[in-house]
Length: 385
Image 1 (cartoon, rainbow, N blue to C red):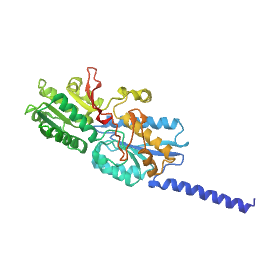
Image 2 (cartoon, one colour):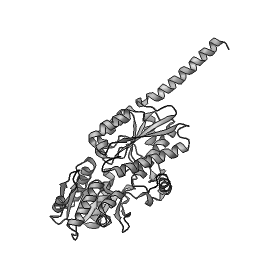
Image 3 (cartoon, rainbow, N blue to C red):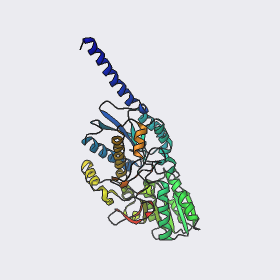
Image 4 (spheres, helix red, strand yellow):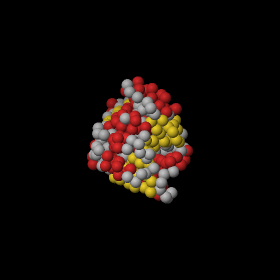
């Protein structure tokens, strides 16, 4: 072969490599440093909900470690970046833009519905694949999720309250953010159809003393007080209920966003035991999460929280979708494979994703707190299985 032909062949090969690289990097305007693929975790890493956010981050970190240890994506390792939205919708879009303008091809999160309503459309328009953690039905279709949606949680809450307590009056203390407000509204509509008198009392996210609202909630002698809050507010309300009306017969029902070990540590075991919670089994209660609990505890020297199990599964089905699509960079192909997830054996049980990106077989239950300060499943409604 002549020197001229060698040079021509080298030029053609170089052009092919450049074209392939450009094609991979052009999808969604995102790529990563050659040799690595970047994903983001978005959630509340500081602020009142930081305990949840850090547990969810650790769930993704564990999944990334395991994937990389197994060789990554055809030898390319995954790099994880953190996006702290502080559970604050006021910075939701700016946080998403930083992720979008960086190298991430996918994001696990956000967690808070009020944040996701604002920034999930930005992710999908920029073709960054969201495996999101929001529960509001308003974010259905914006990526995929493995955790329960409002329309799946609310019927379980209603069935428990109506069949176990047969209430005549229910008072609700409601955080007016997207998820908690919509949960209160859903339950109110269901109860009112049965003739239950429901009173909603708004609370403020930055309150520290809920005694006035607790007194208002108990004024008409309700059968139950429903806490449609996140756990920092719910824990403070549970303490106020115990301090203000220790002998009052009203039952306490805390919505799913209260299920966190931090609720118990902040409210105390006695006040926490006054309430039941809608939620999911703890990692220790999932028979499919034994390896996750062991590996998480070994990696981070602490027991796992509630929602890191779900972000772990979120990252795992994302990596599986990459493998099946044969690419981590083609938004449409990866999303299509995510929606073909069927009976995947995750830490949170079998996972199927339907055509709109939701998980029809969500593990929603009712829990209480035992004398040791641990959550226990006391009621399971089979309608979501």
